[in-house]
Image (cartoon, rainbow, N blue to C red; front, side, top):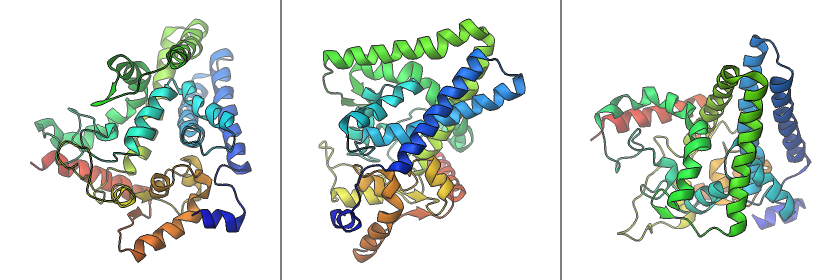
Length: 336
């Protein structure tokens, strides 16, 4: 892969296209917030803008925060840090996210009991090794409601649970420094003041509540669907570790390919909006490379997988990936 970037004389980090997109999404997010809170648009327009605000929050997470968290947004450590901190605009602690995503998810992808992304018990059963309950027979139906709740639960519950239990799922988190404790609480307090207290003061409790629920439920649905299509579909594997070691038999790279799926990679609009997360195989193999390069390097990775007879999982359309995810949930809800 280094040879590719050397031959093309390109940096593996972001480019002007990414920075333009980042500025556009951030300006949209701030502009929508200001117009909704301080200019009180008519109800029909406010509803539309709340959906757009929720979509902008998801886009910031996909395109800015995600690359920044992996250090691939820019060559500059400062800009990567600023990009990662954009998570705080969504009410999400970038500190907890980095521990959960960079360390645990990317190391123990789809390993039950370790990867917190597939740990949604007792409400959902994502793989065969998880306990099946009677309600799971209907999980492929009610799952979409749960996905809508993801963002609001993330804001008010998940981060605090990780912080106070000092665990992400069953995995203990590293000891936080004084600076990280201050950063955690500063971000949470600022989000509460800017996105909860000020809107309630300006609009009243009920207008704020309705608008907040529209925005956060849409963000939660979009984020959940994009994340789940990457790993919880019928074709991906859920390997079990050897004994109590959390080690698996496969090589790390093979494990990443077998537990990950791509979708709608030919759709330039989807790729642009979701920050290349539809090229999830490329991301898991090369998380330090910015998503703007995924379409190009995917050809190299696909050819390499073919050479070594490793299945490269890809859905041509987003809707077929959604159907596969729903089918997996239906199967897990009925299979003993």
